[in-house]
Amino acid sequence: MATLDSRVLELIETLVATRLDWLAFELIEGIRLGRTAEESEEALAAARKSIRSDAQPKARGEPQVLLTKPEPIPAGEQVEWAAAYVAERLESALKQLQVSVDALDLIVESTNEPERPQDLAQAASAKTEQGTVLVLLDVEGDRKSSRKDVADARDDFPALRAALAEWTAPAGGQEPI
Image 1 (cartoon, helix red, strand yellow):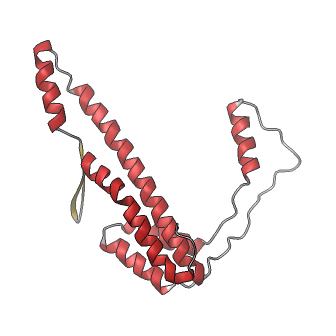
Image 2 (cartoon, rainbow, N blue to C red):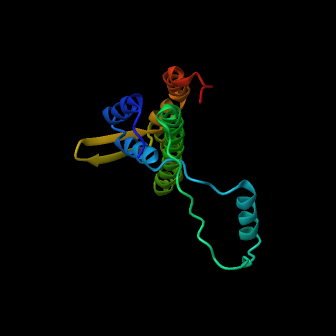
Image 3 (cartoon, rainbow, N blue to C red):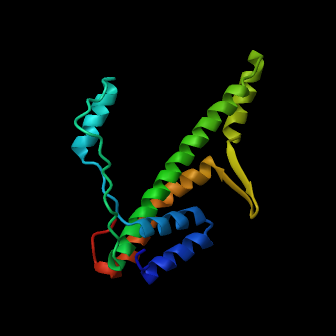
C-alpha cells in the first residue's frame, strides 16, 4: 500500500466528520489498490456493438486471463486523485438520489390518485405542499433528504468543486478538477 499523503488524511477526517464514512472507506481502498488497467475505448466499443447486435463472441485462441498489476498512486499525486474521486462520487451519489426521489414521487403520486373527480382540485393543491422525504434510520439517528435538499446540494456542488480545486492547488499547481 502506498503511504498516504497527510493532506489526504485531512480529507478522510473531513469526510468522516460529515458522516460520509462510506466515501472515506472508498477513498482509502482506492489509494490502497492503486490505478488498475482499463479496457481500451476500441475494446469497449466492440463489446457494446457485439452485445447490441446479439451476436455471439468469437473465440480467438486459448482463453487468457489479462491481469495487470495495479500501479500505486505516489504520495505526490494522491491529493489530486482523491479530490477528483470525491467530486466524481458525490456527483454520482447526488444524481442517484435525485433519480430515487423522482421514482418515489412517482410511486407516491400513483398510489394517491383521487377516486372522485371533485377530489382532483384538493389533490392538486396538496401535491405542491407535499414532497417525498427519504428517511434512513441507523444507530446514529435518522438522516432525511427531501427534493429541496437534493436540489440545494446540486446547486452547491460547484462551490465544492472550487474548494477541492483550491485544496489541491498547493499539491502541484495542476489544473482544477
